[in-house]
Each structure stands twice: as C-alpha cells, then as structure tokens.
Length: 150
Image 1 (cartoon, rainbow, N blue to C red):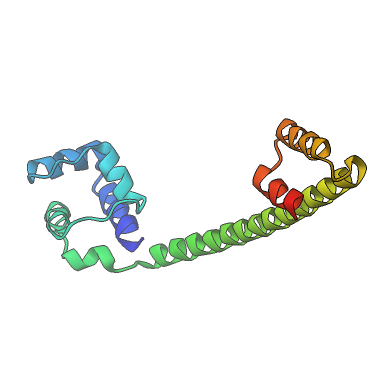
Image 2 (spheres, one colour):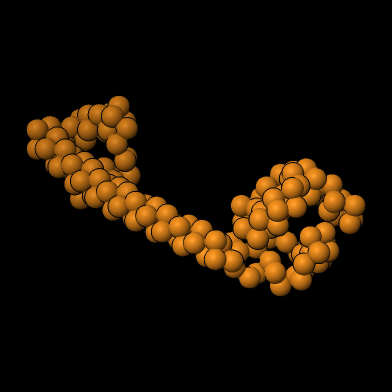
C-alpha cells in the first residue's frame, strides 16, 4: 500500500495525469495505459523491479522512496486498516447470520418432513406426495430423501 500511495503522491507532485505517466512509462519501453496507473495507485497491481526502476527514473528518486512511508501515508494506512477491520467485522457478522439462518432452515425442513410423514402416513403414496411438495417448494431434495428413508 505504501508503494501505491507514494506513486500517487509523486505523480501529483509532478503535476502529471495518469495518462502522462502511462505515456512516460511507454517511452521507457513498458506497455502502460491510464488503467495500469490507476490500478498501481490503488494497490491492485504491484510493479515489477524493472517498472519500479523506470518510475524512479521518471520521478528522479531513489527506488527505495516507493517503500518509505511519509507521515501522511502512515495516517492514510491507519485509516485504511481501520476501515478494513470494520468491513471484516461486518463480513463475520453476516457469515454468522447466514450460518444461523441455514441451521434454522434445515431444522424447519426436517420438522416439515416429519409432520408430513405423520399426516400422510408411511405409505408409498404419502412418500410420493411429500416428494411432489418438496419439488414444488424447492426444498433440498437429497436431505428429504434421506429423511424419508430414515
């Protein structure tokens, strides 16, 4: 992430657009376009060693500069981490809710099959009726089949 923020900072300080930087990288022999710069600045794409050397040459900096965080970069990284932690917490809550919902659904499905078995009896016609209801309601047929046989 430090590379991405440093690249963006250097580009902006040089008053270059993303297209300008892509053009300069093309002049250095790399096939860069605006989206390549954008992905690099958002941390979605890391540079090769040769690309980093070319970027250092374009911005006239030591290549190590791309991995030194400035105070502003450290603050931004801190914000990004907090945001990521919040999103991870939400994902964990959603996964828990989903798992809970799946358990409740499976329990309800088993209870419905048991109730239908009791109402329709253990006859062959009763099992056929249960299977037709299951198909109609889109219930997990394999689970119902094992319940019917059990």
